[in-house]
Length: 333
Image (cartoon, rainbow, N blue to C red):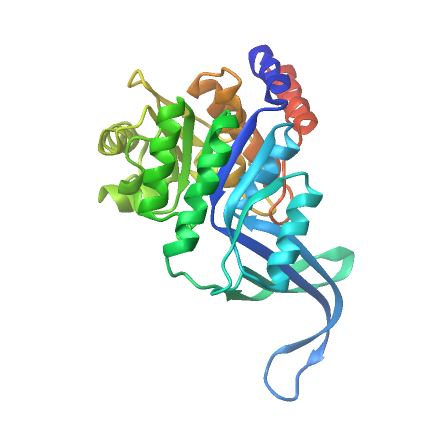
């Protein structure tokens, strides 16, 4: 664990440009009071409203919380939700100079209605998404590319978070890859589908179900993963691939064609898996810029994910939490 602990201070000040689909996560919490007379549904008495940056902002917030410097690039609408999202990012220290305003679409808002019981026991009742999934085009797409041209020369790495919500178009990805390659920048990707447009990036991450869908092959047993990851890496032409497997941990294939499986580090206290993948890609990116091997970076990311699933919502990871978990794990050995 000493090597992993030694990497953490090296995160400090690493400048990471984070390109992705930007969401504001809204939680409207209330206490159940009765059943409505209008329909067979609970009536909640409003208690409070909480907003958090979500989607492609989550890796940026994690990078900032871990001591790096995150520059957020993406699209918001000319609306109050966009203003809230900008303010929420700024409050977390994320550089918002890369936000592009598109007045033709709303800022993506994911509203969750949550019933809150005794001892703050919470149950999500419904979610309403305000979203326009049209791919960006024209002046907005050009503005995103111009922002990357401005920000990448000062960066240590580029992280792309694709939630398939219109920002990460093939043209934007192509320009980002070209710029990063010319600068010799590490490029990491966290994608949910449409993998082909990311061919040639440095490190690619997805989950097992997404990999299975892209490959058209089953990834059900441990024996399925080494050939599956080799096929995925060959298809994408990347140096390495990282596939998260929920309760089964993480599998990686590195540039030497070496396969590793890393078991999950926390099985006892899983409260909310929201944002675990965002934490993984953030830690991976920071660790690789700090000089880690892919195996070391994946081990750190796996420990980080084990911490954030103990929290509710799009939580971030602090370096002291990660250091404490590594020290505790070392004591257990």
